Length: 119
Image (cartoon, rainbow, N blue to C red; front, top):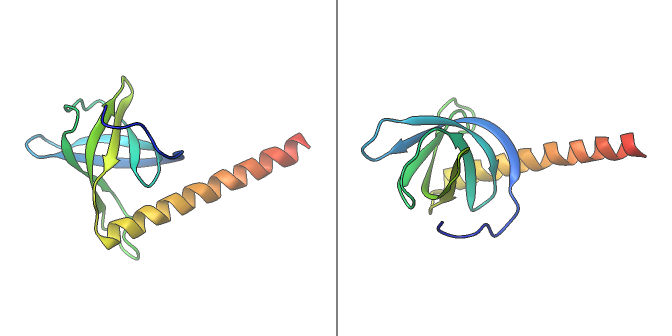
């Protein structure tokens, strides 16, 4: 394992493609993320600290163009991979902020609904 998580991750459900330098692409579903990393459900089993490019389709504003997130494999479980984001350009950072805001908004709406149902 590279590092322990520094901040709470938010739930997501996004199809993704993982591209390793010399292997064929692998596919998975992103399940949670924060500013530092993301967990991907996948059958891929690269080595720890392996660099990769994480492609998420349709995140570029006004286009169907995928966004590329540079990452390293931080840990592996039977369910998938924990990835640590690497330095990224402005468009990637902005896309990540949008993803986090959308996820936080959905989480807040769900918590509000549960509070109304319980009260």
